[in-house]
Image (cartoon, rainbow, N blue to C red):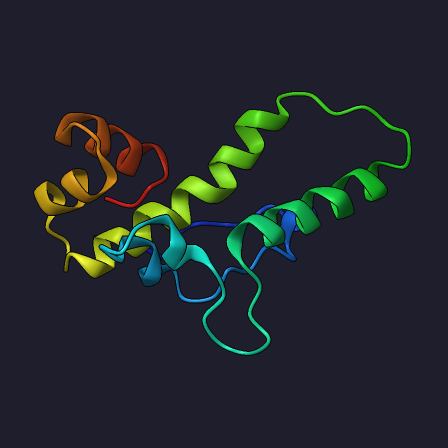
Length: 113
């Protein structure tokens, strides 16, 4: 299983939410907040990355922005959940709230299996 093929978009290179395994915390969305000094909550990291992206555009146009951002976030999310579940796709699908078939499709899409 190749979970480290993901090639991030350089325009969103500042997006770093710290250890992604915290996403699977059963305590819920509050666990996405920064827990250590110097860490940035995921929401703020995305906001900062998008502001940098738009600054970089410098008035230019962008298309398919939603798909680009989702691809940037989805691949590391899937990889982190697979790591957390030790490769158990059934458990990963349950954690993500996805059908196992949908998860497998997304894993193939991102070259994670």
